Length: 158
Image (cartoon, rainbow, N blue to C red; front, top):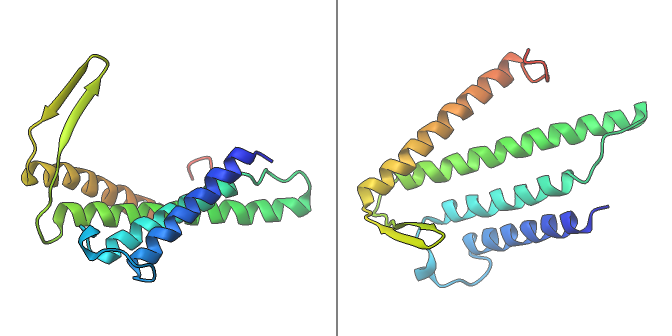
């Protein structure tokens, strides 16, 4: 067993749960520290916890006997479902940033060795950049769902 993978998975799950508990107002957090609706913060916490779970699932090695193959199939389905849920949550967050109501504050910079530039930023530019990403995620998600509905989940592309 890879201890570092176990530690990273458990830590990521823990951080996600802490964020989710704050979003659900089960952990006292100053309301002024929320710069997004609680559902957006909760979605980020859920996504982090799911990623931690996927890290832990990576510790499950492929089965070598027919009895283990059934478990491996279940683990593979859990990986697929978890990855899809993370994708949905990240798309929802990106869509809220790009298209949701309210003001947004963005900043930008480029840091290279021996060079750091502060870039001009505005709400329009930030929303545009996140909008391109959000729409891209939405299109990919639609393609994934249609492929899944068609039954095209095998490795040979069928």
